[in-house]
Image (cartoon, rainbow, N blue to C red; front, side, top):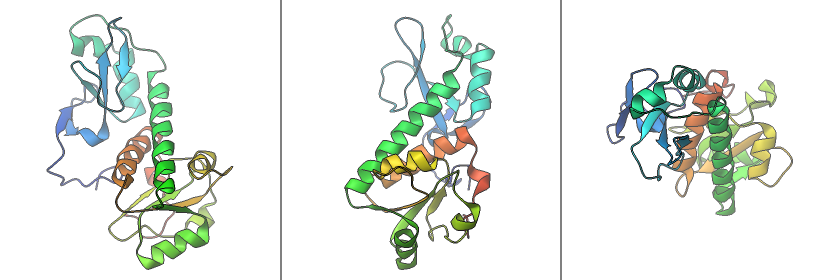
Length: 207
């Protein structure tokens, strides 16, 4: 399994080459950019903007390298402008998308928050994704476990996770399969790459 909880053996995920690392990998772990009419590098987080896509790994070091080394201009074969804080802008944008997706999942009845409710879903096998705040207590988070055949992510803060559930802060959240859950997994994987929280999982039985 690769960083962010993606299966390495997925054969149904188109691949693209990262301009910073030179590696070819599934699109799920990459960020698409296009060049706007004004020559500015524009993040295409929804992958819907017209134009030739330029791909960079969902990793701050890779994004910063692409900006500082002029790799966007090289890929576009033309002078272009990339914001110096492009990596931070991408991270913030993906975090907003993830918070909104979890919120929509909650509104559809496929998500719960709070230790006891999450533990109940895990015990019943209803949870496909366990979300835990990056700034939550390791001791408390360690009492829960990654869903069997599911995913764990710890890339959102307690306040960000709280926004998804209409609260000031949330430490534990769980999502059922179906609905927007697969999109949550996609965005959470990308945010994990940007924030580097994958190695800090305190949940039991991490996959």
